[in-house]
Image 1: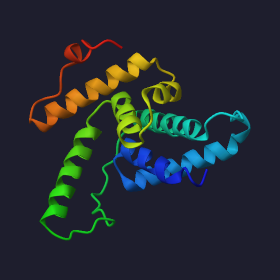
Image 2 (image 1 turned 135 degrees about the vertical axis):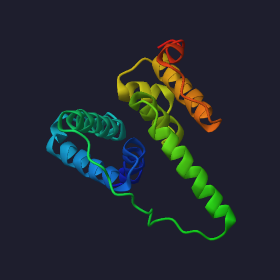
Image 3 (image 1 turned 30 degrees about the vertical axis):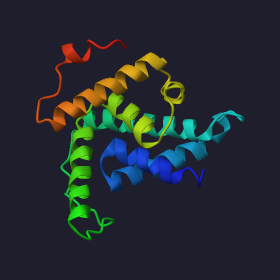
Image 4 (image 1 turned 60 degrees about the vertical axis):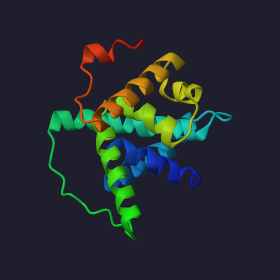
Length: 168
């Protein structure tokens, strides 16, 4: 479980868009995993089981926020970044732009995008992890990429009708 923490943290950060909230999600995920270790089936992938717990925990928190209402977060300067020249500044600006745009994606597209593009999981692994068909993973990833491209070009995201033109 310890070896999985950096990957789980990246995934949680990608879902939440915040280092602090991502760390809180990882902590809640680890607590739930330890509490329910007897439900993990020996011989199955621990990383997939942990990603699923993290995603479910995140979705539960989103649902709870809808009931309780949202609160505003204080903007935090990323204390882990070091700027050492124009290239680093450009890279940081691009990364911040992509993070902000990815945060605007629907959760189901964002989860697939992070698992495939950041964590390097195969479509088949993501499908098993999220309990989806491989075709659904493919279409969600395609929609996420199209939407990100549209955002980067300064356009509005596709409407639900055009987004649904891709098969699930």
